[in-house]
Amino acid sequence: MKPLWFVLAWLPVAVALAQPYSDGVHVLDDLTTRWAQGQVSNALVLPVVRTVASGGVAMRAGFLHPTARPARNQFQITLPAVNEGDRLALTAWAGVDDNARRDDPQNPHDGVRMRLIVENRTAAEVDCATAGWRALSADLTPYAGRTITVAFEADAKGNSNYDWAYVAEAQVVRLRERFAQRVGRNLPPEGVLEVRGAAGDQFTLDAPNHPSLTATIPEGGVVWLRYAFAGARGATLTELQPQSSARVYPFLPRLRIEHAAPRRAVLTQGETTEVLVRIRNIGAGTWQNDRIQLTAQSLGDTEVLSRPEVETDLLPPNATAEARFRIRV
Image (cartoon, rainbow, N blue to C red; front, top):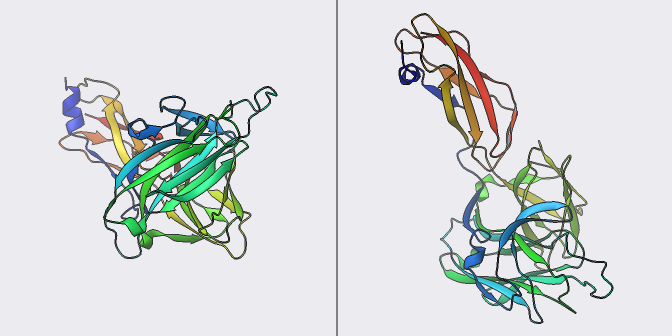
């Protein structure tokens, strides 16, 4: 009888695939993750983070309900120095919960005004009068190598009725210039999109079986937004004006074997069993239209009877795929 660990020792399995050296995006700070650690003022309730939908699009977001005065959540951020051409940016989405009542005549809802403030100056602001996420972003490159303060502010405007305001997926990112890809209509399913054009111009991101995202170019003439359409093979950029330009900084897949084991724990001489290998995409980008090559190498007298194959050509972030092959001991 041969124990499980001995069989496994004979069957090292390695993943080999070609991919670029690095992501075009490196996340330096996730402000949504540390939303409760910010310096909060004038908020009706304590800051919490939950998955919330605005305009039918669900995102992980921090709550910021204003009172008669604007509610604010402020953070200190230490920024690294960057190579020439690379950029530092803060990307986020602002919106009001779809569950907020907009049809209460006794307590009319007029939306909120959301601001992104960098070093006590308003870097971007959006009006969230209707459902749907609005992109908020700021260029932090001029502050490279410094520790700065950034804040998100929710202004109740005329009243604070049902002002269930959220800031979603707020991140400080380093954008690597040499990985930027100029795009027209077709985009990868996830990435950080940079759009330059005239202030006030709008554009839309779409993917099959997903609600669309609409963004507006702010006064500074450039917006950065992180997007992701889970399970899609690609996204589409529409309504972009001819004088505007767009680039995307892509995310890459990262494949890892998280499980490899035979079906049977103990085998006798000459018996066969199936080996199951599970692969997970631990990266932020979708793996697609490529081939995962698994090599099962036998040591000693174990015989590999079949070749392991992965029967998929699409693996979104955090998704898994399986391969099976048989051995004889």
